[in-house]
Image 1 (cartoon, helix red, strand yellow):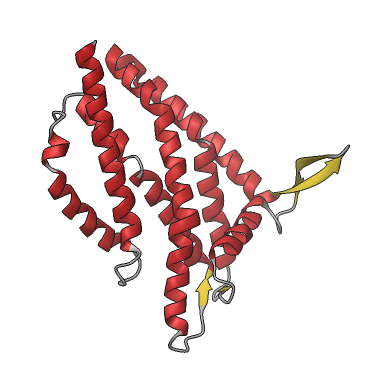
Image 2 (cartoon, rainbow, N blue to C red; image 1 turned 180 degrees about the vertical axis):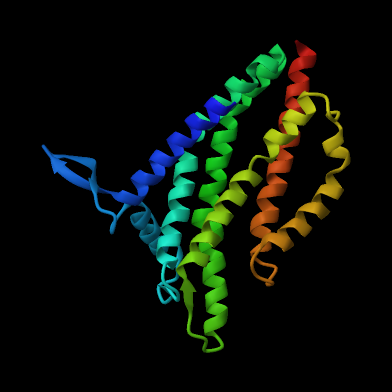
Amino acid sequence: MRSRVIRISIVIVIVILVCMTLGVTAINFGGYQFLILYPDPINSISVQTISQIRSDLLPNDVDLIQVTPGQALTAQIYVSVIIGMVSGLPVIIGELFAFLNPALHHYEKKIIRRIMIPVIALYALGCLFSYFIVIPYTLDFLYNYGQSMGVVSFFEITPFITFVLNLLLLFGFTFQLPIIMWTVTKIGFVNPDFWKKNLKYMIIIVIILGAIITPDGSGITMWFVVGPMMLLYIIGMSIIQLDQRILKYN
């Protein structure tokens, strides 16, 4: 375990250092565009990422500000750590699976292999949904609401980056719901009919969860959480039923 943790840590630290010290730019060579890395701590990958996030997500009339020394640096560190963890995810998963592999039964290894690609795909889909739909709409609504009262809109850089990264992680994990449902059913923790019988309770739980984790009290952005989760729940039920039918015919 110690050697695996060390390897994971080395990969993440290397990516963090690259994000903090190197920039990336496109060059034209022979009519083709190539991306190259170059030393530039002032305009590093983390800085470029923050600039892109600001351009994509903040309303045009809202500015990022730094109210205390070091806030911009803290934001860069947050972004670099997240990039390091995401980039190191294949190594993390590989090392974790290699560590657990001797203790797993054959059918458990088969289940893990089957869910690896869907887990990554759903996580990416959740992050994209959050980045391009949930966060822009939420920020636009909140700041338009403030401007209607004549409030000048600013956003401190560290809370802004934390807000964005938290929502990305939240939706990435939320979109794992069908995989979780299928896995706990496959290992026999619940029976296949459990999800259909408890649908009404799941609706109540999802609505309460959506109301808690959304950042405004309008009740509108809450449905950006409730809607996808209910759809994912139905997809999970459908996958489980399809899997049971396949097993029955086989």
